[in-house]
Image (cartoon, rainbow, N blue to C red; front, side, top):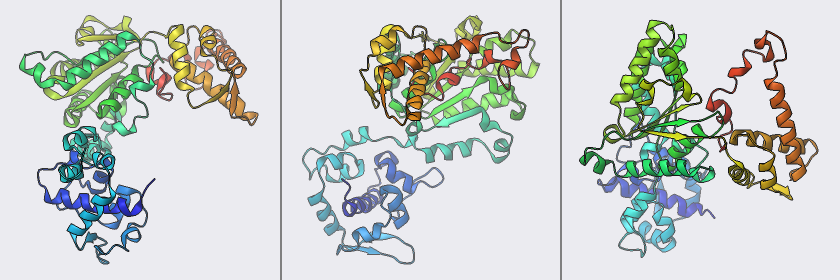
Length: 451
């Protein structure tokens, strides 16, 4: 349970200790505290703990009211800053009321109280603290530096979507992976942990993965979850976007994308629709687009996990369309097949954890959902929930889920029917239905826990 008085005193004490101990870095401040002090991508000393900064850091709306009764606190009415009148008394007051668990969540105070409170260890607290590179404020500042105002107006930022790890709403533990997928992810995690060693022994061609599999099998979800688990910014690029008429010089945009990734490093650079590269190289596309693709391939060759701290992940739904030039850019290929029966049952168990389902039997549902992807299974569950809500129910039954499977299969059959002879575009408003499920993100982008 939150203690507003203790929370505000901790915030003030953290600000003071960080200001005084110059060896401490932004990575030592708890993320919520950093959010209160970022300015143009920097946290400058001295930290000035104003009432508004305290609210940002702690969520307490009236911070001064929380501590105004303490004899060692003061407020500057003009600047809005809050301070201690007696730092020694404040530190003694805090030490009597805090505990090891609380201190371990704040590396700044862990460094200050390491010798005074048993069980407190600064290095452990720092390792557990989300690093500054994962903060949205720092990411935005770096993006502003990378793209000038004119480039932003030209739409260059349309080419990339950058997510802070905290903006990814899944972890690898929430996904159902094949043993091969787990092995490859473990290898890459170890490579990231031991980059210096790999550089020392000259093993630099590591850290370029290609995720291969049908739409909805979790390629995008796994890449994003990896970013969340490793506290890395996630830079996502849809390669087909380089043909957009709003993006100006396409080759320049490709180079800019890699420049952004290196500036945000360490990070994950995720390139979706990688089959677009081979498609373009073998077609009669405009020469400018071909130059952009050649620039892309060259940029991939020049980026490195070991040297640049950029983990490159490509994804494709159509591996048959990749040529040798595309394949050889990657040191590991990770297969994302449609889930088998056991995996479907596991997926159903994971995504229904927060649901109330009478007589739930995931094994039975797995038997009748052959051929469905993780994304498909989420759609089935969504429909079952919505149907139950129309009957004013929040408790589902196994029959609700069976009915939802039947409805999904009927809709899927209608979607694939050639309903109007010779006029495929008429099947779906706005275009060709055959492309509607092409991109992995079309299947799992809106249902991120697809698999």
